[in-house]
Amino acid sequence: MFVCAFIFPNLYNSVWFIILVLTTFLGLDILLLYVSKGIEASRKTPEKLSNGDLNPIQITIKNGYTFPISIKIIDEIPFQFQVRDFKIIKTIPASTQKELVYDLRPTERGEYYFGNLNIYVSSPLKLISRRFTFDKDQMVPTYPSYIQLKKYDLLAFSNNLYQYGIKKIRRIGHTMEFEQIKEYVQGDDLRTINWKATAKKNSLMVNQFQDEKSQSVYMAIDKGRVMQMPFDGLSLLDYAINSTLVLSNVILKKQDKAGIFAFSKKVENRVFAERRSSQMQKILETLYNVKTDFFESDYSRLYVDIKKNINQRSLIILYTNFETMDGLNRQLPYLKGIAKSHLLVVVFFSNTELNAIINKKTDTVQEIYDKVIAEKFMFEKRLIANELKKYGIHSVLTQPENLTLDAINKYLEIKARGIL
Image 1 (cartoon, helix red, strand yellow):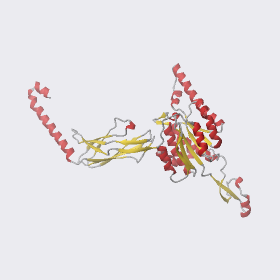
Image 2 (cartoon, one colour):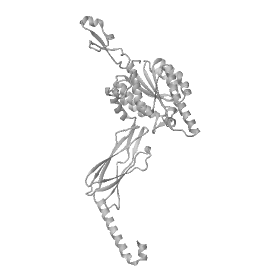
Image 3 (cartoon, one colour):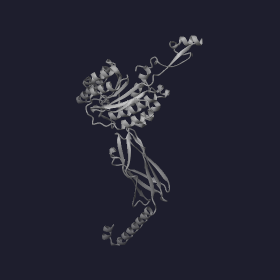
Image 4 (cartoon, helix red, strand yellow):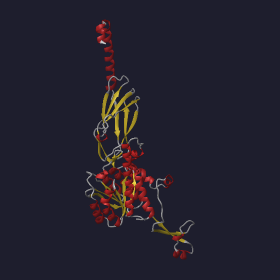
């Protein structure tokens, strides 16, 4: 405008008038924003974050101004998320309180540090912004998925889930743990009639059985190189840890004893199978502290450790991964050795990324080669399951996202069939 005033001198005074008006409004804006106390805000996080799940972070803002304000929130979220463009823009009416929620999904366990909660406030004039800073340096630990723990706590025991196909259990016979003798009612199994009690009572009496309890179940987690592969941002190791936490809770609710250990070059992170009230907390803390450099796993040491420390026949659920038959054959002698003394279930993963290649329409020779190789790898996974079955080793071939549900189903199936 001053350039125009140099060409047209009559505009010179008008330009200074406009500058005066702008300066006046700027001073008024500063007065509006800085005379009052301003706003109050706080960030509310969960006590601990759940790994692999969406965790709500709540921001509460109280507007202390007597006029509506525009705010821009820049929360300094932990560096692990690598989010560099985080901001929330909202308008808050005069003298009101507003709650905002955003979600974070961590993909690794450990300590997450939140920085400052920065809020930039503008008046309706919007000439300047006033910055407020709250909640400096807040640390929140990320634990294995306790959100899944609460979710499957109900799924495992709700009878209504049978109709939805959540639990695919084939019940064979009944277990032999005696509960009581009761009078016969129509529908009771005739094979359970207690003839001695019938003779004494002079009416038909039957033996009633219940699921066997206090059986030892160990979850063995391979934290070696094969478990480093990521799916949806989460490593196979963390999928296994989340599943172990949920399954441990189901096992304890079924009155069995749950224990865990992890191994790679050596066996560590051990919790012996017990059924104490503090067992879940002990398992949670142990799983939180599982750390690894993803070395090559030593199955011979695993076999020796199980033979030395687990004397009673137990159910051992081994979370690992085999990509090829050669990889299985190297470890098969040790798996067979474990299966002689215990009921062994090997849980390994199908590569879901291969499905995209297999289902993709092929147009070139190279794409046909890729599709054939992908189908070969998928077929080899099924061969691994069949090879384990030949030696009496149970297996669960699952996709990472279905791991927890499939592991629970397998445990409930073994309980229902009474084969432990």
